Length: 239
Image (cartoon, rainbow, N blue to C red; front, side):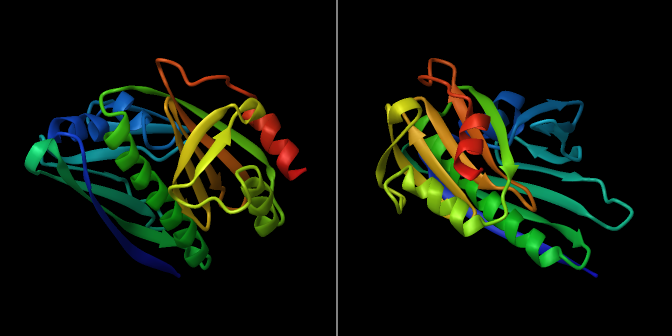
């Protein structure tokens, strides 16, 4: 048993269509808001998330700077994921972005996987918006660390939230990093993710599907402050 899905998202950002195009069609651009490290070459998008290679995604449409689409090949059980970006320039250098993610998830546990995918994709799109509003044209260095397996997710999030005042909400100012030395603002939160923006980084915490808490941070080239061992920090939180 499986399930077809479609997840539309849209936003208006303070960036030009050309800046949006660079963010969604180039390796350095995608590195600055999506997961892990990405290479775009020969019409194929290849992404490494930690040590894991995501399925290659082949470009199916490229009409700069208006439409960009790519999709993974179908596996034997029918699994695939496709992405389509529609870009429309607005007044005063702003741009409307619409992203539709669609595909097919096989297996009896497709509902759990779809929930995790939806929460993650919503976080990534929010990060794209945050990147274009605050860091457009800059390149980030992705930093991805995996904590130990989590058995009690409500407790794990409770411990993490306590690091940021107990109940961090979008718009709240919090401190992060060694000795909580870096001030940031919560830009996104849902049931499985948390995102914080500082002047030089986007810090993200993600509930791994059947696995660990993941630190998937984006550190910008002109300095992101001290860089602690996030793997050790996650282990401290969830041991």
